[in-house]
Amino acid sequence: MYKNKFNLRNVVAIAICLAVTTMFSGCEKENDLNGENEIIYGKWQLKTISPLNVQQGMNLMLVDFSPMNIIYEFKENNVLTVSGRVSDIDGVFEEGKHFYDVTHSEISNGLLVTNLPQHIVKMNTISYCFCIDYMSDVVTLSLAHDESNSHFTFVKK
Image (cartoon, rainbow, N blue to C red; front, side, top):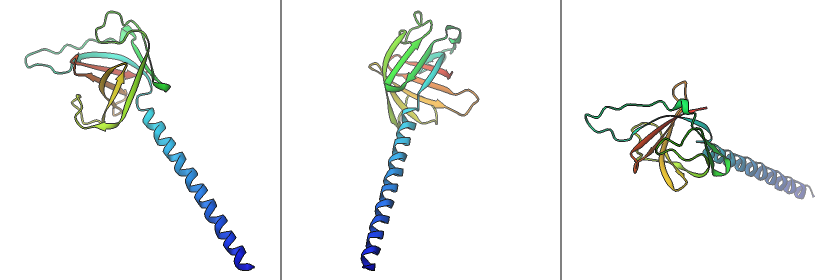
């Protein structure tokens, strides 16, 4: 009789350990996925647009688009909302809602010249290479699109 109680205790203890382990490992995976999904979440204000590939001898003139208050807000459920004075700027999405999808894995041959991890975000049907720089006081998002030869720089709002 003592032997049966001991076995029952072992079975119960093992079952509890398995349940707790499964519960914690499930939570860890969910948190990891939430972190990946949040890589680009939030409001980003357009700062500059520049050529992606500057040819030799060409002067690079950066224009500050901050006064136009163009905001790209990446929300949950893959909704991108664009607001601000966008009508006169080539390459900027129209005001309103758009679809986006992020490739979470890092890419090794990104368009941006940087040591930062680069990813792909598809906005509507256009794929952009992007990276986020957390190193300075101002968090910046760089987007590059090779077909338009454009490099967009945004600051976190």
